[in-house]
Amino acid sequence: YCAECGGLHPAEEGDLWAESSLLGLRITYMARMDGRVYDITEWAGCQRVGISPDTHRVPYHLSFGARAATPAGRQR
Image (cartoon, rainbow, N blue to C red; front, side, top):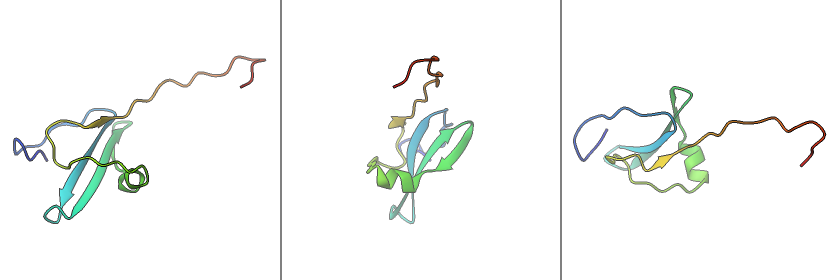
């Protein structure tokens, strides 16, 4: 829910946002990954993510790079 325009906005892949409930006393952090929306409140608390809930723009975007195999014979 967007408090600025009073409507809902679609989430895109990698979006991370916060939503409030209980008159703003409870903040839930959400993320869209792999086409699904996940509640990541516990993770956000551990990472000390502090974003304002119910904003018009998406404050964070998670980026997932392609994982490439390490070439044979080469170690890190």
